[in-house]
Image 1 (cartoon, helix red, strand yellow):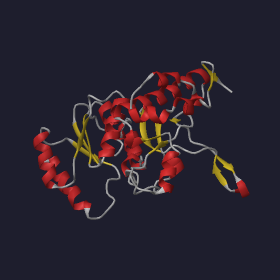
Image 2: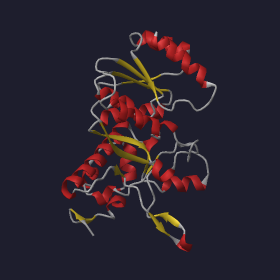
Image 3: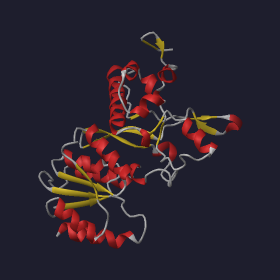
Image 4: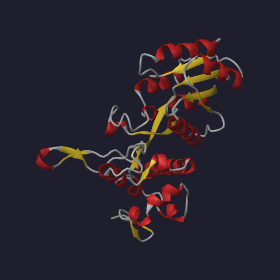
Length: 286
């Protein structure tokens, strides 16, 4: 068993009472005692589900939440950002010392054979993770939903869809970071329905004046954290914007006129929103 300051690493998480630490959202001495040992952080469990049943006597839901070390929605922005930075640093330090690539923490558990031959996860997975992507040769780390273990369509009513990173976003990140993309430096670029903010942060890194928008407060919060995590907190403007002509006009007035480019990846989920989306684009590009 690995040792850290004379304390066995596996029992360290319960000993520190990380639930209380995370709820406060503060970095304290107990946090630092957890150090940078991979064993401490690789099996952390962070809940992404909104607290829809708070105050109810739903025992099953209460037990489900109790199984996690913390709920993403209960943590302060400062607490989530500090945690994300720690996870990213743990992965990078581990790589530097072992040459083993760790692109996600908490790590995805493998599937193993359980009772009666059924496959099951080797340990409970975390719904929230810090995942590292490489676009155009640049590494960036992002807070996102763990779709590898929980799927794209699980918890659709309890989890903000936008913090799941959908494939079209990654395609756009790769394309616009590549040699065939238009030059975006100095251009006013607006992303609609940004979700976790990956593409908007990439736009900012390419030198664009990036306006990253969504309607969901959880997505906007995640985007702000991801911008800070990647050193783009001051460069990105993270703003709420609903689809439709009226809100688009307000947005133009408040934020200095029309845009050179408008981007969106997988932004339509219901038919009735399509007309409103095109109203927004017509106003914002004019």
